[in-house]
Structure formats: structure tokens, C-alpha cells
Image 1: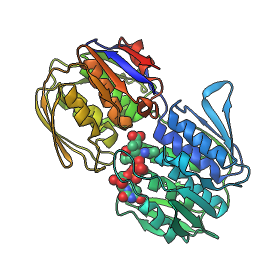
Image 2: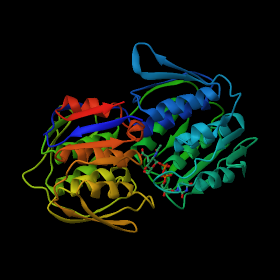
Image 3: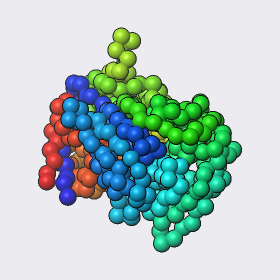
Image 4: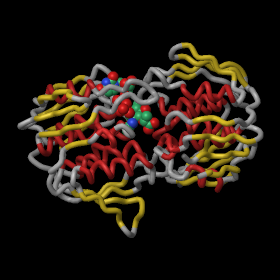
Length: 422
Ligand code: EPZ
């Protein structure tokens, strides 16, 4: 297993190009199952979850071919669905495999998807996906850890999610796109990735209105056709590098990003003293500089457009260097503080009780050997390593490779002393 070795204490300065959003690319790839025609997706990040999704689609006999002229693009063609199954050994490493359930059911009337199983950050059931599909006429049974779903023909329904679910919203939009009649989704997720998924589906001939709002309307159509689509920038990668600038007293220019997608993060970090500037003439760019002060500020994670749960761990790293006490409340997942214990080994002063974490700062961080536990926790440990004195080594960096493309190369390019040890 690879690990990172970081000699901290260096200011980061320079330009960081932001990749396409992993959490937009994964649903986009799954949507290609809805048509027999080729779907080309561009601005795909080279992260491990994309490799897993590609293996999953190929297991279903879809053809997935990278474009020679563009290594960040792929064409997917599911000419026919002959193997509508997502096996456990693929699903166990990536919960987002559940995104193939809606498309397979809508396209072929059958799907057999391994249950994702809990992962480091909580139980993460799929009960809301299943209940919604049953409302659309699917017969779903759970057997031997698999969701087995059948539907002669899905029909539209009035569906209200009792909890906001991102992939649940994407799964139902996909199923409703080919269902008989209208589906109205209320309490839908509003993340930019939802809107991006709907934009792709509409390019494929779907009739989806108001994606990105809490109520989405979908008129079913008989079939969908191929399309070409460019994935939105990764707002979590953008936020992660913004924290990297702030925590190293640095100055970074983030390019190919969309600042509008992290308004809540920008607002929160600005209140702590981080300085942001954007040039109207260059909409895809955002400059982030550490300010003259860094004050602790409380945080509560919320569904979009609130402060993203996927940025909570990164924010916690920053708060260890901020003046005063900050109370962090995680409202989306029940166990998303695994990074806290590793952070205290670096010298942070963090106390956890239930969904709350109290961080007291600033405390000097001193390099140590730590272990990554999940994707965003590992990002937190990298950020802490950049700010710590001496050397920090981080084991199990496969977690970070799931969601960030060559993060060590991007960090080295702006002055970090980080290397991957095979
Ligand atoms: C998506 O996960 C993202 N993944 C996650 O990013 C992100 O943390 C999460 O949304 C919240 O923003 C992708 O988009 C591929 P949810 P998802 O369904 O859809 C509960 C990362 O770091 N719930 O919105 O799986 C669930 O347990 C990953 O890139 C049910 O109870 O999350 C959680 O507490 C991590 N029943 C809450 O809802 C269900 O059927 C939100 O989950 C579904 C969800």
C-alpha cells in the first residue's frame, strides 16, 4: 500500500488546475446505461472510483472506451444490457455503484445490485432509493446481500424523500426518465451534481425540469439517445485546495473551477479571515490567500447549498491552526470524525461528543505517522501534514486516490515537499 511522506511548514504558492467532479462523473457514467447509443463524457477525473465504475459497466457488457485525443474523456455504449448485475467485489469498494440500479431497472426491467454495506463514515443504507422505486412499480427483494429489482414498466409517482439523498435523487431521476407518465420528486437533493446529471439526461432526450431545486418534475419518454457532456468542476477538490492555501499561509490561484458551487465554504472561510478574490473576466478562477488572522468559527454541515459534509474534515484541520475554540457539528453522517483521533496524534486539541467536535487552537502540529480511514479524512491528514513541522507519513493513501487525481503532484507543483512511497 502506498503512503505519503510530507515535510511540512512550507508556504504553497502558484496555480492549481481543478479536475472534473468525481460525484458528477459517477452518475453520468451510470446514466449511459439508459440508452443503446454512445454517450461521451468529458472532464472526467482520473480517480480510482472512476476505474471501479468503468469495471462495473464493463461487467454489464457496456463498452467503455477512452478517447485517444482526450485522456479525460470516455465513450460508453450499452448496446444491449445482458448482465444487469453489480457484484459485491466491485460494490464493496464503491457505494456509488447503487447509481446503476435506477438506469438498469428503467432500461431492462431487471437489476441485481450488491448492497453497498456500511463504510467508514456510517451505515449509509439505500432504503430511500428502494422505497421510491417501489412507488414507481418496481418489485424489490433483498437476498444474500443483494437488491434484486424487477419492473415490467415503471410508472411515474409523487415521491417525497424523508431524508435528502444525493444518489437517491439521481437514481430516481434516471428511473423516471423512462417511466410512464410524470414523476414529481419533493425534498430532492439540490447539489450542483444533481443539476449536472439532469443536464446530461435532458441532452439524451429526457424531460426533467427544476433539477437543483427541492421539487423536480420528470416527464417519462419512450427512449433516450446518445449525447456528449462535460462534467462540472469538483467543488470539494476546490475547497480542499482553498484550505491548503489557508493552512500554509499560502497564496493559490485555482483554475477550471466554479466558485459559485462553494459559496458556503467561501463564506465560512472568509469569516475565519481567509482572503478570496475572483476576476470577473476569468469566471473559472479563484484566488485564495491566507489573511493576517485566522479565527476559529463554529460550523454545522448541511445539505447543499449549506456547507458540504465532504468539506468538514478539511475545515477541522484548518481550525486546529485558528485562534480560539470552534465547535463543528456534523449533521449528515453519524460517524464522520475518524480523522479526529489521528489529528490529535499530530498535536491537535479536539474533543468529540456524538455529532459534535470542539477544536481548540492554535496548537503546533508536529509530524507523526498517521493512517487514513476514508476519502475526506485522508485529505484532512494531508492538509495537517502540510502545516506540521518535521515529517508526517500517511498510510493507506488509496483512500485519497479514490477522490483526488495525483494530489501529491498538484501539491508539489505549488511548493509542497510531499512524495508517494510505493
Ligand atoms: C453522496 O453520497 C456523495 N457521493 C458523498 O460523497 C456525500 O458525502 C453525500 O452525498 C452527502 O453529500 C456521491 O455522490 C457518489 P446521501 P450518498 O444518500 O448519495 C442517509 C465523497 O466523499 N440515507 O446523500 O451516498 C445516509 O445514510 C462521498 O465523495 C438513508 O438513510 O449520500 C446519510 O446519512 C462520501 N437512506 C444521508 O442520508 C438512503 O436510502 C445522506 O446520504 C440514502 C441515504
